[in-house]
Amino acid sequence: MAETVLKVENLKTHFDVTKGLFAKKQIVKAVDDVSFEVNQNETFGLVGESGCGKTTLGRTIVRIYDPVGGHIYYRGQDISSLKGDDLKAYHKKVQMIFQDPYASLNPRMTVGEIVREPMNIHNLHDPKERDDIVADLLKIVGLNPDHIRRYPSEFSGGQRQRIGIARSLSLDPEFIVCDEPISALDVSIQAQVINLLEKIQKERDLSYLFIAHDLSMVKHISQRIGVMYLGHLVEVGDSNEVYHDPLHPYSKALLSSVPIPDPRISRTKQRIVMSGEIPSPINPPPVCPFLSRCPYATARCSEAKPEPVKIGTRQVSCFLYEK
Picture 1: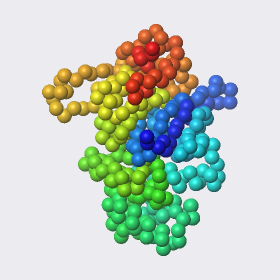
Picture 2: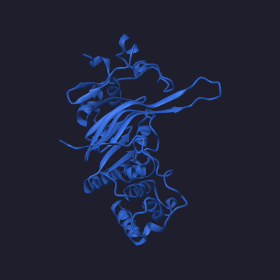
Picture 3: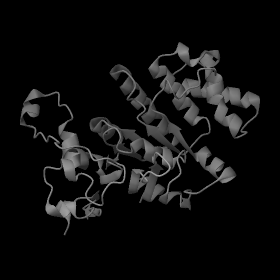
């Protein structure tokens, strides 16, 4: 049985957006009661529409944001409230690749300074070793070590993302949160970056949390998939099972929007159109989060939130599967 590297348990990340001294308190429940696990050397895909809480979840796992409830366990240790040197030690093991390669690199720093910075912060290696590691990492991600003195503005989007990948590897981590690492890139470059991430994973025995909004891309790179909607994880399962036989109505709608190149298959494909408005994540009522857009909604859905139900090896939060 595969070793569990990361375990997220009933995690909550909320933001207070109250305006005015006497205004009613308003809380955005960006991540609300989310639970899942990631195994050793596994890629766990996290998919959902923009604004569903995927990035917030990823940033909470690396502790850029602090959770307000629940737990994050890394190799059995609860890291949810780590501070100071303990949190710094955690960051050596868990790194993040950011979505926007244009905003995530300091334009005033050279490539060498960017990749070297995490080693400086953690006081790892002597200056000569750091330079050697930077040169090796640039080779690994497909860049020329001679680029070490150049600035981010001199590179394309795909090359900048490779610099970001090199930076995430500089501490020799065990787990990387990949936050939509290809969404800002040209389609022609996306496959190259995906192949690079898969190659690095095999060579370094890494585990990934891979965040994206494209279900077909997540299926390609992930062994298991979690489908997220409005701060909730509505379905978790094997990537092939979720892709070919989704259970949750939102998973079905998300999959039906994926383009199919073959027009013969496309014509016979069931289309699920989501009508209704997306509810506000501010002070949401205690009902099914997908209620207002679900074509299968019943009276039960407006009375309570569905609890996760086990269906074979999968987990789905929907009253349609309640026993």
